[in-house]
Length: 441
Image (cartoon, rainbow, N blue to C red; front, side, top):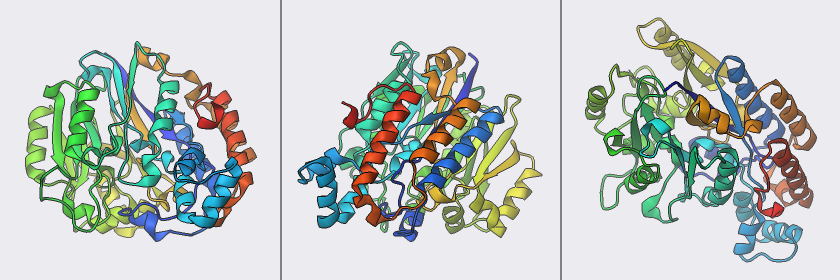
């Protein structure tokens, strides 16, 4: 059945700030306490969405979460009015306020793992919300993420949205950032590759940084998403690259249809994995970037692999990259050599995403890939689909509500809380989402 891949991009939130909350994410740590620009961050993301939509790639938007997360601060013992809760947290535990104000939900590659209808037993599109339990600031996202996904994929005859796995270490799930799908046409059955960093009882693990995704979580997600067992494959991430800052598989590998673009050190037992993919996926091709052309450190600093591999209608592929890849002499030289070689990648598109890059995520982190048939696309909430009107509307909305300068100290400003709620109340109406945020209920 004819289908297209639709990219649902996260819109950067109003409290986007640099707090270095994500241990193991070197860009996040390196930019800690720098001054952020939420308005610019949101506009950079919108420009990428619109440019890709204009190029013919179906594009949609996922809204930010409400921040500061007052209900979570109340769970932590802060009391009084909502404004007083924020003020007390700022005075007594500023790091907790920073965590409760994180705009990390913009990384919607971690929102859920998706199974297209072509791969599911019941013929529905399935989305399982990620629990993200390795980091406190992310572990609180699941309830709002689920509400947003249900408001976007609200036709229950077409879509099944599953709640996150239990919040325990054994079931750590980071969503689509550790998931790849291979095959021919998007609408044909494919092979789903789940990548994990640790397994209960195994001694093979990184020693410096945590492995966030578990095998047990990946197996549970595959069951929830009703992926046919014959179409599932599991692979372990190389623990040595996790220790070099590769906190998710999408920092070291990206796939599209029959192509895997990855570093030569991306996976444990990589040769065996590639052989299995060649056996299972007709026409499978792997582009393994050698260490001498781009080191793991280069990949982490430029987010070379945290790119988007997209297919035009005629099958040509384009690699969507952050500006940092272009600015690195060695990486850019390699990419241009790649263009003249015999492989499916025929074009490079570069975007300035500096505001989000400084917080530890590039083009691939900002999007959730959902394969949809024409009928399934019609069942998506149409108000979230990117077009000229929505692009103008959202830019005007950002101009009205977002600040162009934010520090950790600014999070204590009660006006920021009020601005955020007014903005999100307006946004839910613009995107026809209903009451999805706690303050609206």
